Image (cartoon, rainbow, N blue to C red):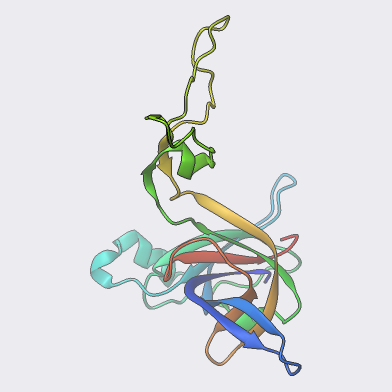
Length: 207
């Protein structure tokens, strides 16, 4: 299996024997039971549904508990995600652990970026702003937004103030620096999207 679900724990540092420092993000990855396997059809690869965490009985529906029971699980997972299968698909009930990854591999991490609320163009789009002295009162405003000729309207996609962050984000080509199978921890070089304790999915490049 080339993918796993996890939770971002935060960032730390790893030191090599020669003293080289590597900034890494620690991800609690798995264990993830295989809840369902959808067979390949019409040129599409098989899809594997993984679960992560355990949902409380009062927070899961009867359908969700029954769906998990078909795979031999006692409780419904807290999170369900689907991934394309590469090679032979595992059977429902199998468990994917962090040992599916190895140090030195390249992975991509997908998560929900931190929400920043309503922001102006300087913060949201990195506008330079206007002069900040000599009585200027528009040093953080966007300026003109509509052309004075045809088409005399605001063009779609114009960079404007608005809701920033809280969007699906993927970072590619991250190096796996260390794998701790006993504690289900994955150490990935660099930063990954999302807040601490935020859910992420980790996939091998090409998956």
